[in-house]
Amino acid sequence: MSRARSPCNPGWNTGVDYRRQLMLATERPLVLAAYREAGLDLGADLDRLGAAARVPADASAVSWLSSHGTLIGRGARW
Image 1: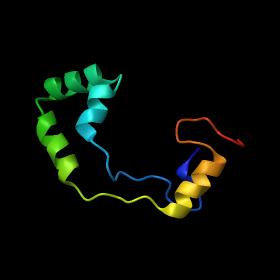
Image 2 (image 1 turned 90 degrees about the vertical axis):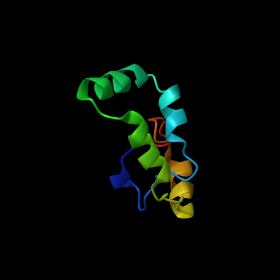
Image 3 (image 1 turned 90 degrees about the horizontal axis):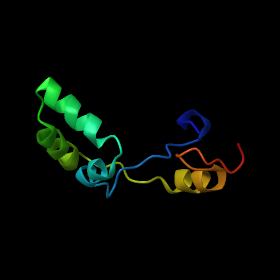
Image 4 (image 1 turned 135 degrees about the horizontal axis):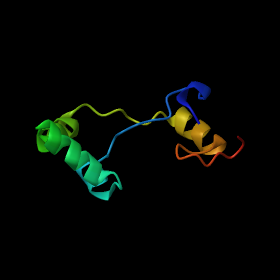
């Protein structure tokens, strides 16, 4: 489901631990290789993400999303 279909922003990142998400990601080896090849500092980027302002959940968006499906492609009505 796309954000364009939702009447509000169904995304938020309050409480997200980006380091943990990367550790769990199946794409982790690809990310590590890309950073290494580019000579970039993944740790510094993860620090910046961790320190960035958070986007809180919009209660009406969460309600809408709950009744219309999920962000991982398992739509309730689509």
